[in-house]
Amino acid sequence: MDETDNVQTNFIRNIIDADLASAKHTSVYTRFPPEPNGYLHVGHAKSICLNFGIARDYQGKCNLRFDDTNPDKEEEEYMHAIMEDVRWLGFEWNEERHASDYFDHLYMYAVKLILAGKAYVDSQSAEDIRSTRGTLTEPGKESPFRNRDIEENLGMFQRMKEGEFPDGAHVLRARIDMASPNINMRDPVLYRIKRTHHHRTGDDWVIYPMYDFTHCLSDAIEGITHSICTLEFEDHRPLYDWVIEEAGAPCHPQQIEFARLQLKYTVTSKRKLHQLVHEHHVDGWDDPRMPTISGMRRRGFTPASIRDFCDRIGVTKKDSFIEMAVLENSAREDLNEHALRVMAVLRPLKVTIENYPDDQVEEMLAQNHPQQPDMGTRTVPFSKVIYIERDDFMEDAPKKFFRLSVGREVRLRYAYYITCKQVIKNENGEVVELICTYDPATKGGDSPDGRKVKGTIHWVSADHAIDATVNLYDRLFTHPNPAGAENFIEHLNPESLQTLTQCKLEPSLQESTTEKHYQFERTGYFVLDKYSKPGEHVFNRTVTLRDTWAKIDKQNA
Image (cartoon, rainbow, N blue to C red; front, side):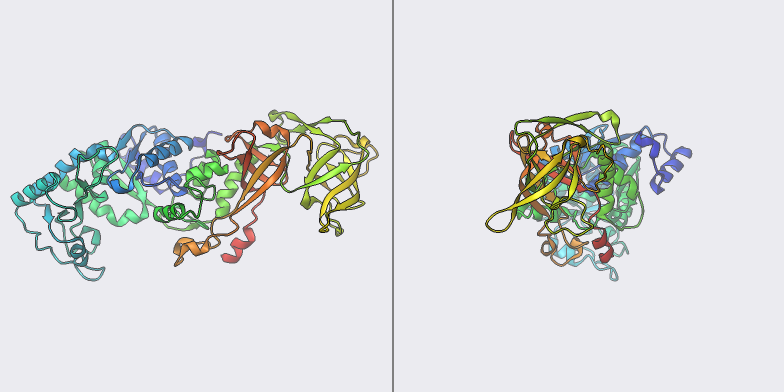
């Protein structure tokens, strides 16, 4: 189905519809403006889908603009990763822009504010500026430098630009209202001195504009019609509008705020994600336990499943926490429809079929997807010695255990009925092998005499199986809201990764690729890890077949 056929309206689309109907705008122009100071996470995915989706649905345009005004935290690596993530999610931008493209323009807008008496150079320390800003109940105090004359402000700002002063010696502030009930309007800083090499402009600049000054003017320069951002910027909207009006920008985009995505059992703060990576709590930004788009991709989430998740949670004005199950169910539904079915034994138990011919190998016909005949069939080799899941055998089984036990008969998927005759144990009393017999008349899984078995288990041929390592991923935190905890690191889930070695997989997986998704029958959905090497297969579990956390989530509700 075309995703544009399933568009749900929301308050942002209602605003856009009204703007178009009133001829306030004749077209729609949005932008996605990440800072290249880390990898994108699932919260960014919501913003990407929203901004690019609106542009697509209204036959408009969406720019990818990098907010690169804080060079000591920004890197080329992050910029290229962001571009790759946006494209992987299925979107393409109209133009690639950078806030640094506008440094000359922004400087001139700052000069215009100075000339209009709307900005001044403040020589207080950062601490003094902070201490005189006031509180929510008390007004701020005016800077002793607030009434410098225009010529002096122009001269000092020019000298700041030329690098005459050390870092922190002066800042440029807007002259608005130190008694404003909105603290953001109490003469906010517009420029600061920062001698840091910029990954695009080099050492051309030693003063850099602040976000609140840069963002709105960048929107206006690009002709953005609707500047969509998260709720924490709602209190900044009066400043957004003030800068555009007072600077005489070429147009006045409309800022619209929506609730950010807050997902349970994870964190999306860039600072916290940096801490997880740099303190080696995870294996890099693309660790499959991370909420980064690159991590989710490596784990096996599909672009369609992430877009579906963003559609499901919708766009609202109220912050709320989203259950992890919503994301996982989007993945399950997409993978259930498209993933190839294969047989894989993660905890192998050897089974010898004593009455099966020693040198015989049969090719059993298997369906690639029982509900999707168009996906075709494959053959799976069957021989005298096979592996089954250790959990599919129980020596002293209760009545309701319908898998293999001594004296019991089960169906091997696509193959034969087998009956367990003997158990072989090692010196520690552990079961290491089962001796079974098979019924040759039940090939394909049906008995000609009509007898029924309640259990069907999967298997792989010992002689033909490929060895693999399998990573079973779980939630990174045990606390539903780790970001709200005093020390979020204390709530890391020690069982978030379980690595199984010596797993046995059917030979068709020899040709697996990182973009091909599989359902390991009866186990879950898996994908080949991007760091697998030839002959050393590593598979990552995307999600289980069912939500195993439902009871835990209910208890924590």
